[in-house]
Amino acid sequence: MSGQREVIHTRIWDEEPEADNPFAAAACYCRGYDVYGAMLGNARWSEYLYLLFLGERPAPAAARLLEDLAVALANAGPRDAAVRAAMNGGAGGSTAAACLMAALAAGAGQYGGAHEVYRALEYWKECGRDLESWRARLCNPPVEERADIWLPMEHPPGFDPHGASCPAPVRRTLDHLAARSPGPALPWLAAQREDLEAAADCPLAMTGVAAAALADLGLGPAAGEMLFLLLRLPGAAVHALEQMDYGWRRYPFFRDAVILTDDPGPAPPDSEERP
Image (cartoon, rainbow, N blue to C red; front, side, top):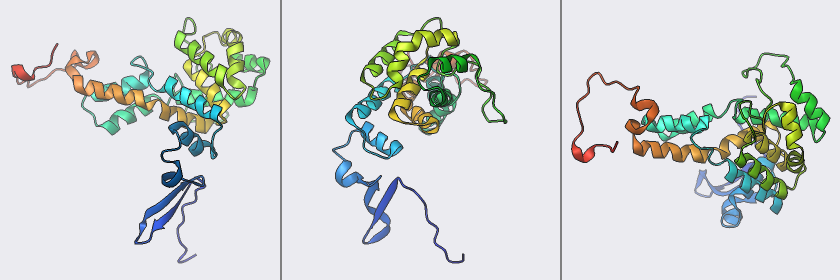
């Protein structure tokens, strides 16, 4: 209809405009809560995340579970593809945004990445806590009926196809979260881990623990995938910053591969980087 106003539809956010500027907000409400008038100074980061993703204030146990999960996922270390991608950008002099986008791209996939968590959450939705259903699904993964941006999974989601045994950080994270989870998935996973690993023929990975925690928090596959991407960014950011300080000459994957055709010679002694 001609003259109809364009309206953004959202159940998440509402604003009241300033009296002298309709383009600036005087008050902001997230899911009905006054962010700057009531939440700021009273809500923890984990509680705000829960409110944003799930639409309601979390119970204390749920907030603590999300907070502990965030600590476990914050930095996967340089072995992780997403962190290494950010490090590559930092060593090469890329911008902050480019480093984080590289981490998101490399960490979005189906081997240790966010879409593996998506697939694992689908398994939780389908199999619940039925061990026989899990065994059947792990041994006979579903075949996509249509072409997708993602290729078929080459290993059971939530498990490490190249692992020899379940690593200590994965076991410790699972045990800690399972003891404090308000939901049933993590305790069940802790109790059935060895049986599931036998069915998958590979050890549990951190993506499997994360998927169970996200299931206990009430997140579906799409929301869990998005939150997993977000929670892993801090480690990528700080590793990129560190490599920016070191420079590419101290980064082993660039140093021996970069050949200057117009090398100006050694830098002055006071500006040379330490070997």
